[in-house]
Image (cartoon, rainbow, N blue to C red):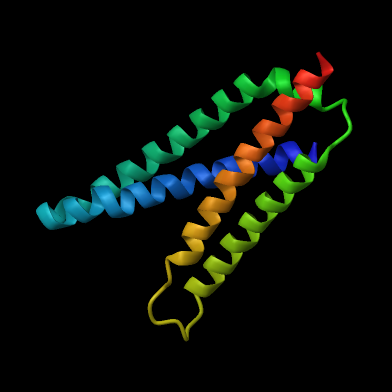
Length: 141
């Protein structure tokens, strides 16, 4: 149960971070250059749509992986389960460090590298978790 909650938290964080990078560097940079007065309205609309898409992504992920997770729930956790949990927990720690370093008064310019590192940790952790669940489901069959 803890691994499923950790997976869902990691998948949601991955989705939010991907939408953040897309919105920040692809959409809002161009929009700010073209129409700076409309930027706050488009930012609000983008945030709402990104959150709605994140919920939709999580719902579809849970529905598609439900057969594999229900079978894997009754089997012994393997090495891949531990690796996936370590990756997801490392992603959580990296996000906490990124948030902390963003709000430190000594830091004049926030660094983007910890956010990118957290995104990559989440992506690898989610992929390893899905691989683990599918392998355990195939072993049961």
